[in-house]
Length: 124
Ligand SMILES: CC(=O)N1C(=O)N[C@@H]2[C@H](CCCCC(=O)O)SC[C@@H]21
Image 1 (spheres, helix red, strand yellow):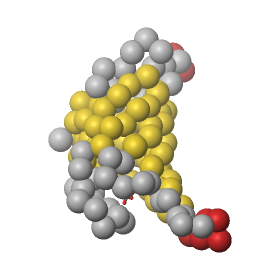
Image 2 (cartoon, rainbow, N blue to C red; image 1 turned 90 degrees about the horizontal axis):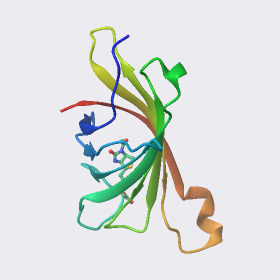
Image 3 (tube, rainbow, N blue to C red; image 1 turned 180 degrees about the vertical axis):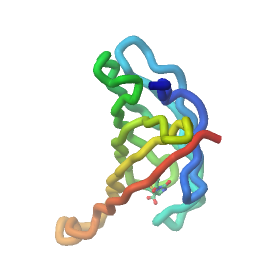
Image 4 (tube, rainbow, N blue to C red; image 1 turned 90 degrees about the vertical axis):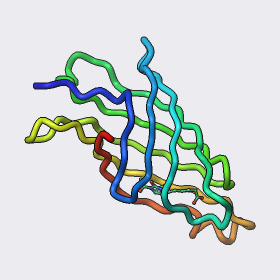
């Protein structure tokens, strides 16, 4: 099976872009995320991400991963988790699910503070 590598530039169906740097020996990586959409009223700015991928040989070149985006323009944070696949056309695809945690004024609003979703990234 062709290998799927996380490093490089990706885009999702919302038009958000992310760039992931080299994966180090521990499987950790850093990058940046430029979201096309936001729940925050603030101006969108590029934000840093940090994450890890599994490097075990049993990944068959299609590793699982997770990363956190620490939004630089709002008090929220998003964690993504997913797997890097080579699809049936030989293209690399990141299938992810995410949780967006927004800061709320009071614990009474905690119930509405977390949004969840799925998203797919392809290489730009
Ligand atoms: C991949 C995907 O679905 N999303 C994406 O690319 N942008 C939105 C969210 C952007 C949050 C910005 C900060 C805020 O609004 O507080 S994270 C999940 C979603």
